[in-house]
Structure formats: structure tokens, C-alpha cells
Length: 349
Image 1 (cartoon, rainbow, N blue to C red):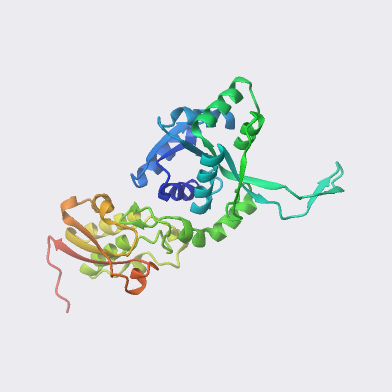
Image 2 (cartoon, rainbow, N blue to C red):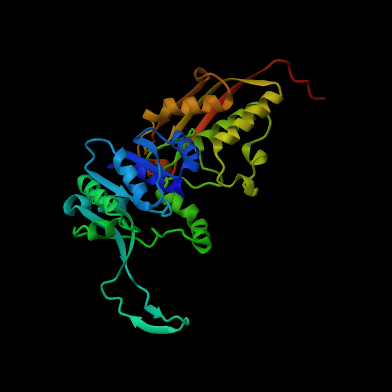
């Protein structure tokens, strides 16, 4: 859940800093998660407190000087969209405080203590709050300082602003921005994950997450560059292809990191007596712009294969608007590989 929400905020052009407020026991895992992401925004792991109020206050203390708008978001809402984030930022800037919410569509019933309907509640004017909830940074610090000092119970950040006497502006949310709180929610999220990933998660290319509004669908993480390199390596040794070694009919490879598969390919080649001499790969995509990320891609790929970066060449090109890649409907990658073998192969009879 955290990964999907994090990738969406990373790719938003207005986001310059991300603070992960994490329980002490999970901080190392969170730092590892940050290390896997692109270095496009400042990211920091902050220990949480005993209550939501304390955790938010910890984050507000760690914000960079000069921050003008702060968004507070629950990682349990992994399918937040760029439209919702942008609308919340704009409303917070204009009104000081904003909450993403959806008008209540279901008929509401109030139950008695015996579990029977007591009354049907008029839903006119009722909204279900979501996150993110946005504030001008100075206002957020001020209202939370008061909440801490006066020991207010906090379950909703906008509620803190309301209690402090500040009017909160409503921003219309989305049904997809639901909160995962129980098994049914988790099952729904898993069913939506493949489609949601294509809509909200930036593509991984060469082991690097590249900020973009769209992602790629695939049985693993759909890293087309790493897949092309694996096929080139296996093909150079006449050892089949990735479909043979990592079939998409095997559930263990669903969503797996392509870099992990590349490590396995490298180990397999070494067992067969091969060493990687060099790799030359080209990614074809109209967008996103890949050139700034190529050094990181080369480093990730070389590390996975246990070779020097000098042995891995990665280039990017476009099709000038032609074909599925030029239309922005997908990406392609091509690779060639040269291997060396200490002992010659036996001639076939």
C-alpha cells in the first residue's frame, strides 16, 4: 500500500518533499523502500508517536524551512490520483485548510442497541472524509501545537482545524481513493491493483522508477528494459528466454522485481561458465524523458549482474510520434549482449 501511494506522490510535479511517518519497528523497511525509489524529491523517514496527533506533529517538525503547503495522507489509501492531490493543494493554498471528501451516496440508518433500525438519517449535506487533507504549513503547525498543548483527541486532521475555529474547504474526492481497513477492502485492492498500477504507478525501467503519470502492465513489474537485457543474455548463451525460466503462469513471479530476476540470470550464466563482456540496450519511449535516469539505470543493472558499469550501455530514443510507443501507449526495449566463456563449448554430434 505504501509503495503505491508513495510512487504517486513522487511523480506529482508539485511535490518537493515526502516524509514517511513510520512506527519504530518498521523504519528500516521504510528506509529500504526510499532507497529503491528515484531521487526526484527529498524523502525522509520520521518515527511516529503514540497517537495520530503525535505522529503528525513529528512530521510537521521535520518539514523543510520554506514549505508553504503540507498534505497529510493515509498510506492505507494507495489509489489516490494526481487530480485529487492537485485539487487539495490548490484548495489549501486558497483557503488555508482543505479536506478531500465524497458526498454520501448510500442511505444511512442509525441502529439501536439491539441491532435494529432506529431511524433513517437524512444524508443531505453529508460527506465522507478521505485524505489527503491539506493545509498552509504555518496553519498546520499552529493548530497542531494547540492540539498537543491542550491534549485534543485526533482522528481527522481537518477536525483539528475545525476545533481551532478555522473553516475547512471541501474538495471532491474519488471512489477509488478508498481506505483499506479490513479483509474485504484488501481483496478489492488486489483485484484493482493491475489496472490501478497502469493508471497511477510510474514505470520501472532498468530497475529505476521514472516519474510519469502512467505505468506499464505486466506479470512481473513490467520493466521492459531489464526484460530485454535478460533475453539478450540468455539468447547469447543459447539458454532459452525469460518465458522459459520465469513463466507468467507461475504465481511466484507475479509482481516480482525484474532486477531480482536479472540477478538470477547472472548467477545462472556464471554457473554455466559465462561472464558478461558487455551489454548494449535501447529504450524506445515518447515519454517520460529517460535521459536523466540513465546513469542510475546503468548502476542498478551492473550491480545486479556483478559487473562494472562500463560494461553496460543504455540509450533512449523516441519514434517521433509513430507507433504505439510514439502515441504514449507503451514502451519498447532492445538489447544485445556479448558473453565470454573460459572453456569452449563441445561440438554437437
